[in-house]
Length: 258
Image 1 (tube, rainbow, N blue to C red):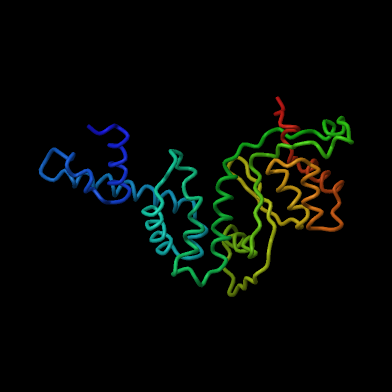
Image 2: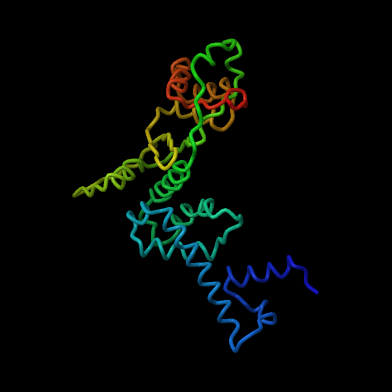
């Protein structure tokens, strides 16, 4: 007798893969029980495709809804969810979409759709009370390089090979210029969101390296070293002051403020 896990796996294969062969012997009731299974299969695919379309409206604006819908259907078949949270589904979609033959003429598509993915995630973050400057000033400055800072949960740092923020601004402003040229060139973006809103701005490469290292959990000293490898005259004092002034720090040394 098969275990519950084995039965669940057979149902999963039938619903996500479209092959009900392994489940056929268990289907019962009515003249065509496989038709009821097909309803579940169509609902599964449709709901996931719709979830992806809702997450990538700017990408639909860029490449067309028909192409995006077709790509989403292929993605759902090739990459069914592996976690119960549908909000996290689709992180691989930008890479999948950019690899399709139909989108080969859009070398900036992966950067653009990845930007949209991250904007959607940070927009639902809840910003925390920021650490006041006096709390930093009260600490021993000699120990500053050893501090680990927790940044706001709605922050994301993205390096793109194309200036896709310009395209995103066109989408957000509902602007349709007569002509638009996108020239290849790296941009270093800081994305910040909270409670349904978001903003994006470009950073100098050294500042980007510093802040993204902090966001990844590096100490101030390690983050400053990473920035100095990119920018010879990196100004740590100015960069650190800007992080404080912009309210980016939500915690010091891993301790959340109460």
